[in-house]
Length: 232
Image (cartoon, rainbow, N blue to C red; front, side):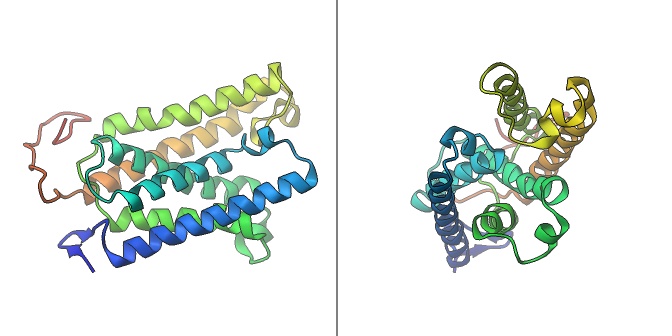
């Protein structure tokens, strides 16, 4: 097993096993979902419109990339990995707090796809983020607004779709009809967005704190300043 003084590497046996578990479990859960969608006559556009599905598909793409190419990835890959980790962890938290019943959130009666996509993968991806340091230090001040772009765009497009296109809105906390008007969505959506800001900041800070240089990568000279990092 390949290790360093500050953590495991992409080639470590434990890490490869963890990521392989994420990949296989995630694929099987989504195949299960698609079979269910076809059997129940649900529109595929609605299924793919859920943040849970989108974040899990992103996880599968990123994990497959890490397994296939453990070294020599682009400079921006650490940021992509961090954003993906933040999205999937927050997917699990929002589901447990806002969407699931207490029995689902705390019990073991949840269906397999939901268990994998809302519980197993968020936990394993958080563990992966803790175990394997990034190749380059993250700029926390840049990560927060950059990583928030997708959740904000998702929110806006959900309202556009619900109000101007087919009328479908993925989640109750985004639905004006549930809350008595668009103005009443300030509190529920504001809470979710705040949770994303805090969660994204924590993931970025942990990634920054866990960073250590890899072999072949020159340790850069730190720069002082808000949001500054030791690399460009």
